[in-house]
Image 1 (cartoon, each protein chain N blue to C red):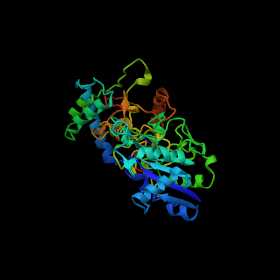
Image 2 (cartoon, chains in turn cyan, orange):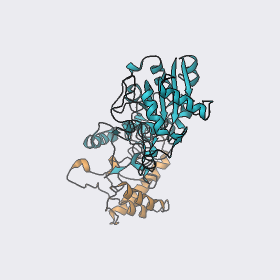
Image 3 (tube, rainbow over the protein chains, first blue to last red):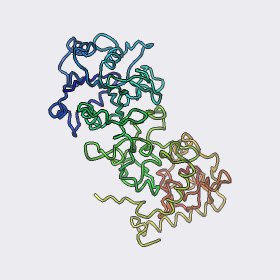
Image 4 (cartoon, rainbow over the protein chains, first blue to last red):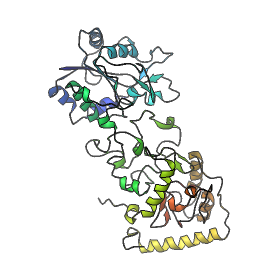
Amino acid sequence: MANILWLQGGACSGNTMSFLNAEEPSACDLVTDFGMNILWQPSLGVELGDDVKNILTNCVSGETKLDIFVFEGSVVNAPNGTGEWNRFCGRPMKEWVRELCDAADFVVALGDCATWGGIPATAPNPSESEGLQFLKRANGGFLGADFTSKAGLPVINIPGCPAHPDWVTQILVAIATGRAGDLALDEFQRPKTFFQSFTQTGCTRNMHFAYKVSTTEFGQRKGCLFYDLGCRGPMTHSPCNRILWNRVSSKTRAGMPCLGCTEPEFPFFDLAPGTVFKTQTVMGVPKDLPTGVDKKGYIKLTGAAKAAMPAWAEQDIFVV
Amino acid sequence: MSENEGENISPEQVATDQALRKKLEHKLGSGLVTEVEPRAYSSNEVNAIVARLQALAEKDYTTKLITAGFTSKAYNPSDDDDDEQACETCMYYLVHRKFCELPELMLPVEESWSCRLWRI
């Protein structure tokens, strides 16, 4: 039996909504098949008021063993570092978060806001938001770079806006079944099993990427979304085209650009006008090139790819 | 063109493209002064030019050529051949149809042409 407590800070509940759609395993499977005991969760918990406070207090005191603490949303520090803008059970949420992180065997940050600050931490960051152990790319965040939970691991970051439901449930199962030691984390403390490959890995548009054919409108089946519509698939670490959404699709498969939501900088360019869904360029060359590719190589590759392009690559080859 | 090339494009469309391409070539070859510079090197500059193009009538080809800064030779900002900004390497260029697919332009072009909205 693993006790799980789940709280939300500066959150939209998107990760909870995503979690409730999990299929492999489902949220119910966590309880029935994997012996998890969800102490409280904002959308599932039946307790209110003082009853919730008692659950939290018992976890902090150790009366109730807290195996996994899941935090969704940013840690809100405003105004002036007090955290008063986000109160919960009679005190600033950040105070609960600190004590619960210290009490938990494992701490999981779920979604961009909990991992890196996400949209709330976008400049000028009026809510003084930060992630549990990162603020954008900077290690540290609310808990500090040296934080480890009782089990000796740093915060396990599952980013995304929202995170795919199965990333969440599979990580929770791994922890609850004693396999947390098998979780290899990358430099941003993301489980490598999900975040080593790229969003582009498995994208159905890879042929068009290879031959440098651009999609010019949303929803167009032909072409690659990277060249003009701001797709960040080649630079973003996620399995969105390996572990499909609702088992059937992904943004890029549906004709929408990847926004890079599993990377610390999300939302990119601070959402400045003209930067969303538009590839940013300098002298006609994308500012952000596919990971590992330099400008010189990119230009040479483009020339060669265009020269070799077969006619079908310019056409819509998908027949409904 | 091989037998498989351009299979989605009708012969009528090919002929229409060819006729318009000749017409545009003639305009460029007859001394049409276009806005070759300043180049649209930042995203803001690109957006500004695209906004001007969006205000044009679909068949206002001359103003399209002027606004986009078309030339019949590739623009090269340096001595480096890799920097040559020809339609041939542009993302909007359809190699087999010889066509610029930027929604605001949609023009038949030659691979050696160039414009300041070039994007690789």
